Image: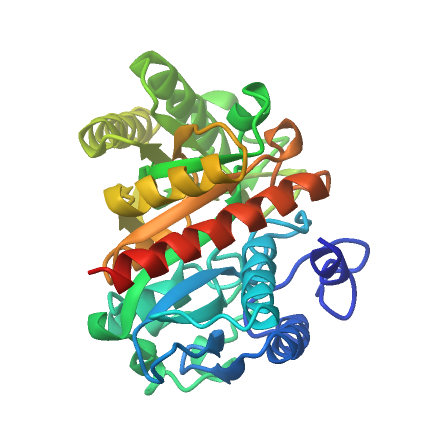
Length: 403
């Protein structure tokens, strides 16, 4: 917890007065340096892969054995909380340090991995680094630039070598991620931790509405083609369609921009994001199609252009049944009741599921608040999570030793 707090301020933040750590920024490299020191002190050898992920390896009884990957992400959204991502990494380091202190080696190596860009808050592609490690990232997906026009190729990585970060299935036993819940269920149930059953499917779009800019004082209402007014009606339709679905479906517009952005000019262009999620991919797609059809109808009625670009499409990602059982047993052994819950938020585990079996442990966060400076985790809950993680590692070791 103290390490997460230390990483929440300069020089580990790119934002004055708050936390923002973008991929490949000075704050990112500074945070990697701190983590590398902690990994080394815990008995790990440290390296950076071709995607600039930081990896610490604690060797197995037999050197070169496949690894259990324990990871989460190092980057953050703007004005973030301190525990979303880094807590999972620092817990992994603590678990390895406990094994080192006890002189314990396992049938598998443990690699703690801090992924570089899960949030997509600098470059417009979520889970860029975990998809690279999982081997599911296409070469053309690396043609990216941030809001300042800096291309990924010019940001400090070799894009020609980037995809060599991919791991082979033979090199990995499983992937485990501890993460704050970012929701209120654990708190409502008065529980510190829970076993994640899977991650909801999600699809994300960028919508560009084209109208006609004009003088705010001289263009009559009947003659306007206001891109922002059209976008506003579209956004209201998103909420209406998602509410009417009456399922676990959620739909969000989290970002909007109007151009030219002057108070006395009718907006000629507007852009906004659309994020649709559900544990059931068919429900998600049904709602997304209804929303996009509504956008087109609104644009036609208002004589506006409407360009729709799909940013990513991530399927639902179930966790491995055996690993969930081991996590439940470890939870009980730590003196905690078992609760299984689904994740509505996306995590690196959903990308890693293409490479190996995955498991996730959720940790209670106050009020379910995340992506916000008010994000809070009790140190006692983090300690419980550590004990569950250590129990899970021991049970996994016994499972592989008896296989």
